[in-house]
Image 1 (cartoon, rainbow, N blue to C red):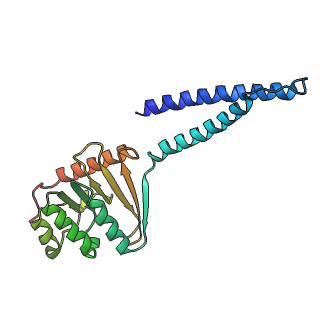
Image 2 (cartoon, rainbow, N blue to C red):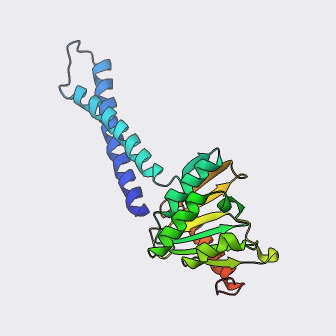
Image 3 (cartoon, rainbow, N blue to C red):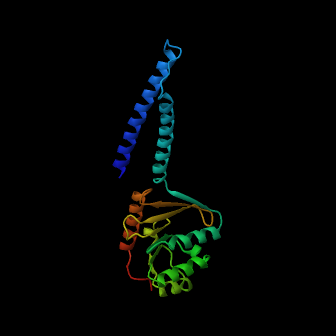
Length: 218
């Protein structure tokens, strides 16, 4: 796909260059001609075409370039973070949450309710954390089918992220949090803007689970 895009850009640049060259030759001929009344009937069309091609190239380049830029959301309080997480996990057939601890989830009842509702309707949820989860918080989630994986502090992943659709190649989305709760900057990658980042996230999940017992926490 990227090779096709590059080829399209090169062809567009060649056409633009040839059109611009013809336009400059026409302008130079009119400017330096000894005939005062000389006129090239298609010069205005050439100038207009060059301008349109430049605008079209910029628009085409920008549209393709934006596809490879990740989406960034700034959450300034706990409510905004909660609403973002509730919406984000709603779009996944599988959801993996990686966090050092789940204290933020205790303060987000709407997210817990969404997890339970989605899990009861078939969405596969996994939570990887390095801190034991309180029984009152874990029980209703585990009862809905959410699986917990608790790593030891020695192998605790430093990354904090939520990965959805990990089982559907090309449909994955990854939200990575930066900053301290509740002030979060969240970067969202997809198969266009961050396939390598998503691959690394999958590796972290796979290796974290390989280091511990894969059964749900008792």
